Length: 141
Image (cartoon, rainbow, N blue to C red; front, side, top):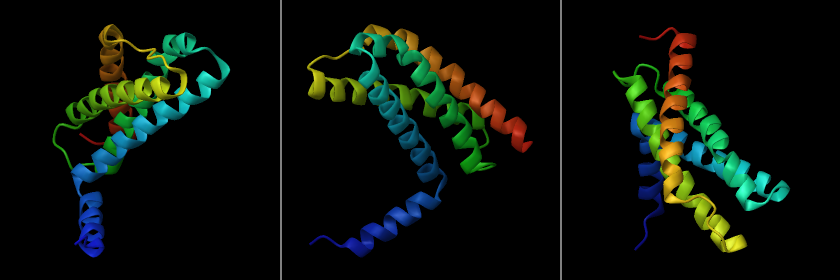
């Protein structure tokens, strides 16, 4: 049988942990990419949206890096490494989700596997910059 009380208690405990807070920031980054890509696809063609995709990913991974440090503060010893890992995960999940969304709606997958060679460095650098900004803002080590 499905025990909703156990599931809700588990999700509350997960959300209070460092892992849960980090996963929450990753989810926010992926949803942000989808929202911006969806908005821009209403204004532009799918190929034009794919051209702007590194900017969308860069913005959202910078916010993810900042958010990870903001939510965990001194929870991780290597804050920048955790933020860069979160940035890589956001890039991979956002690319997959965007391709699936465009495939269902327009019948085209605008972001190819070759674009990951551009998107991954953008995600790593901008998430590192976002975490560095948060560390400086909160005066963490």
